[in-house]
Amino acid sequence: MPRSVNSVAKRARRKKVLKQAKGYFGRRKNVWTVAKNAVDKAMLYAYRDRKTKKRNFRSLWIMRINAAARQHGLSYSQFMGKVNVSGIDLNRKVLADLAMNHPEAFKAIVDKVK
Image (cartoon, rainbow, N blue to C red; front, side):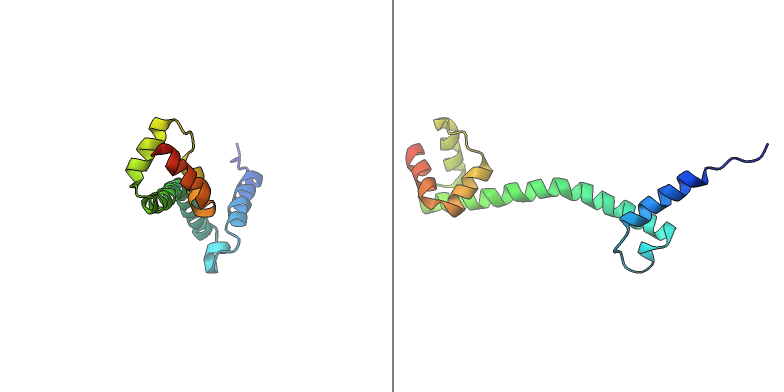
């Protein structure tokens, strides 16, 4: 019995990877073995950095809230503790946005929790 190979699926799989490698430099864009490794690594970086991005933004929001709270005589931890006790349901993203773009609204929140 002759050996059965599915060249159509094989070619489609390779075309998909080479399409993902479009824009890479040198052999990474057109040599199958090199492109496959480059795309695999790129996918790992993308997966990892989607998680890291969330961490970085939370850190940025905390820095902004801390800076704004200290202008009103509170540390970040004191401010967030008082916000939680007072029942204000604003997350860090919104508080940081208020601190940056609407300082008078942030001051109103600080005055309410003091």
